[in-house]
Image 1: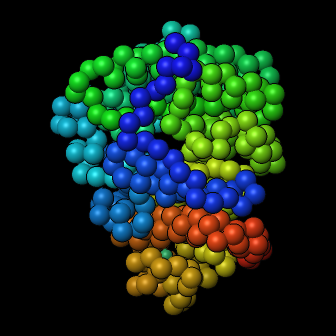
Image 2: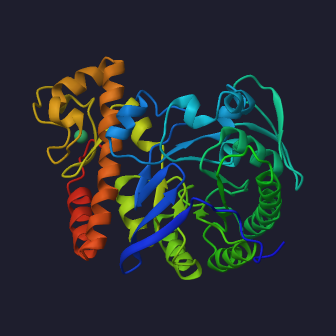
Length: 391
Ligand SMILES: [Zn+2]
């Protein structure tokens, strides 16, 4: 198969509405509705954005969410989810969903037994049971889960990996992509499959020439409805990440949405938007919430467990329009965090997610009206300049 064999992408399109430098505002259309980009996608690891109902996630302004193939494969099992009508039906989320390939979790959570070109043998982190992921199998699992966007199986070396390791991972990622694509296309012929599209993952760590080569190779393999940039935010220096994104911007087609995997924190998100990325996901807002940590535009990242918030009657972030900030003060949220109360986890999850969703919304508006460069510079100065000593 060649580039002449386009990937079926019915129901998927991307329209650019404006640019400022490399920053882009657009609309990514999916069968379950539009995603206005730049957009932050809350992570629903186990088919749930931790502690929130789907209605609450929707009320945050989130349009697309992410679920994890590795976790849902192990529990409750993709076949069960498929039998029950797929993820949208199972978790009662009617908006767009993206599933990752499971690759990241296999390489980070599970105990790896063997990595070969054929696939990866690993042991579940839950019960130690042994499993074998192949590119074809990962596509089949994601077919059963029925997310709108599914991801190709890839191998991403950790930050600091040497050139030889990255070259080998790039070679394997490309080989696996071709097999994912072929399995995806053959499954398209089955009548009952839902409308889905397959995103490849671009690897190459922080080696500019390997990134460019990987981009060329991946683009040769199909007319993709979207591209994922993997292998960043994995422990490399921040300057290396920014340079890599700038290098990739020149190598990727402008009319295709770009999903930067695993980013980010608010300041990282804004800097990545400035370098041409459109879609983002990260567990930080939900995970931080469970540790009592929240973001504030004027104070950066703060840990509400700190004693200095004991009598603080201000909202977490006076500039935030979320339910938590409209209703509660820091003194109460600190109490909930210290007492490890469930409501505290919920309220800070609402705030942290809204903080990122809203940041992406405002970046979009500023790109469209042309004021993104000065606005983002001011925002970053404020956020990073006043960073709390307790953060
Ligand atoms: Zn808030």
